[in-house]
Length: 299
Ligand SMILES: Nc1nc2c(ncn2[C@@H]2O[C@H](COP(=O)(O)OP(=O)(O)O)[C@@H](O)[C@H]2O)c(=O)[nH]1
Ligand SMILES: [Mg+2]
Image (cartoon, rainbow, N blue to C red):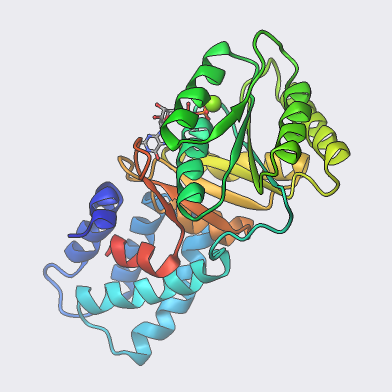
């Protein structure tokens, strides 16, 4: 089993075991079996609308391929999943400006700061020289945490000591990016304020500050979602998309959760590019999202 499959072990198990069991004691695919497959998908956090979508295409495949065993059924399901995920593949990241500013948003604890650390290391390996901006000024610990990641990734960070205005840090961060001729800026933001309205207003203010300093910035706004929250991730994404306009998604904590099926729901229901998946707490535990290798790792 490869690294990716191992990381997805829990979701693999919750999907594969019931599908294999479907055929125990019977020789062919019947309606009852298809219904149980549907239930398995829904139970794996694929969600009702996306399960219906997968099943629709699957029925045709079952007929045309004359499927009568679990192996063939899994392979047909895998084809359907790849088709469903294909529109969400973002491909390799390419900056569209210099500096290209990426604002990273999401609720508290989903993995924003960790992901920025991993992204900084990855982008550095790819030859960019990212600058980190510590605009989660809500907690002092958040700045320290980003500082540690900056060290680990070997990149610069712009932070304020003892201020509570994220827009001011962003202003200074973009100023520094220009002065130091950096091609890429990653902005870490807060995920928790007293109310959702406050949080969204703060993020909008950060956006306005960025665009005043650098026209067109932020060029990307990526939402980080925690896979272990399952279907809840969908409603979070809708909320953030309405408020700040997202250009991409990052799904973290796919390791250690059985709710990996949510990837399909996220892609099918939101239609936003899924850029990266997080598969652990270490610097290398981040993978560009690729539907084919993801589905292959699942089965
Ligand atoms: N297992 C796992 N843990 C993660 C992943 N990404 C982040 N975490 C952990 O989730 C916790 C919250 O992460 P943090 O980056 O502080 O979240 P933030 O509040 O959104 O900035 C930390 O303990 C991280 O180590 C991931 O992909 N897999
Ligand atoms: Mg954070």
